[in-house]
Length: 248
Image 1 (cartoon, rainbow, N blue to C red):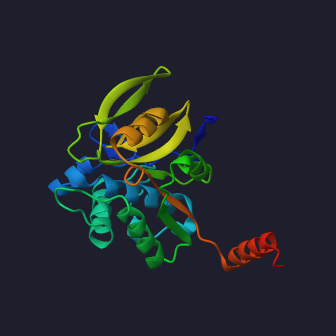
Image 2 (cartoon, helix red, strand yellow):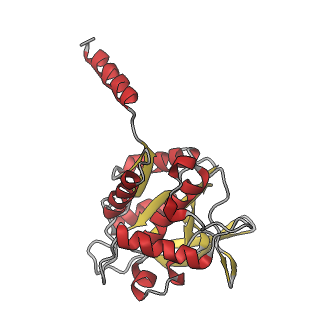
């Protein structure tokens, strides 16, 4: 598989904190203990929806109004309030377990229906299609939620390594499992991601090996956002399928 560079068209979300500017959001900022421990799925969903709302006019909603400061960063207290509302309305957390991956696209689809946004979200599942679909989504300027699933069986202790980039080198930073991150770019066979408000990198080869050996593509996968088919597009696809069968 050819690994080429691909990234979002706009700078990723940034929140001004005591430690400086973040790279995306973090559940560690939340006052709720449950959110701090299990809220990575809510943050991933919230950040993707917010990126779309900032850079696609039809995706902007009243829930996101007032989040952006004059300097282009996000308001810290309003961002936390935004996450609380998303959790309450769309994506509840199961204490002691977190959020099953398949609930994230279902929650995003409820959000899209509520605000009449012509997008849909789905769990990809197919291993062979993951990388090209991440690449395609970034090319369409849509970040991708990536699940680093639980070990199977659940009592396993294996984790996936995250890297930081320094002077062009990828240096080990920490290891995770049962965690959601947001993919914002691809380069040199690595996924550029946002996690805990920081920029990290994941080796795609190591991710695939982790899933095959210690998890499953049913729980380690991507939440993909794409445009809905309009009636005209659906009719064209139906006609093309009919032509292939020799009906037309």
